[in-house]
Length: 365
Image (cartoon, rainbow, N blue to C red; front, side):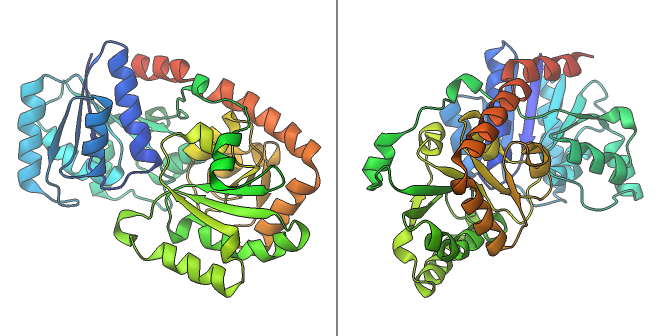
């Protein structure tokens, strides 16, 4: 099949990583895959590293008439059978570009939860052109059915497909030693973009309460600041840690390529996001068998089996997060049982080959 992926995001997070990886995996299956992205973006660089054929265009959000014509010419000349979009805001550019090209089937991965009704004439026209919406979780599927002008048949729940053999449950001692942590350290880790909505501040504020019970606890923050916030958030977190007297208990590790190694250095994986539609990193933590403490928001509830696979805490609440951490450390046997169930669930639910089979079948049908 000739498959064209499009995402004009300037960020580099779970959505962007997954879409690039999906394009790569479809290429490995013998499909002719091409990716259109934003010019001079992180995605342009990562697509090159992944050796996925790509083209990049300058992009103005929502209304960019010259880009619509450029896309139309590109799609028409390429003879693409399938176009797969990954951000809802891109549909406003893609739909006009597809006018007069009824042979191209449009698919859309819904990576976010739709928060409010979008049933005006603009969105009715937009979504009438989408053959199938892949919602990453039950909450995403529910929100799409309730808030988008679509039929029930237009949307299906389809979770991320993960390369599960890449993940393991072997404790990573090399990274801990490199960072100066011995086995007595209770390493609490966050792996995500650094921005207010991801809850790194609540994790810092939870430390004093945790340290009173577990003095060897240490917070490891892994990731980079969101592009438009570079140089703003990490200094705020450091100031708060200094104010609370815990600056020596917080380490910023930056972006890390080897995710399984990093996760296996953690004693607890933290997901304190204010709201999370779906999280690749929590799936990765489940696959590594790491105990999880996550905020009960959005798709996290389903991801953690409504408490069966991890401890759920209140979002935007440092005290509740601290209690969840302490509860996990207080009962390592129960934490281990939750992690074991979580890994079994992740291996079954996120099998990459099974997900790719479904996607290809939908493309063809």
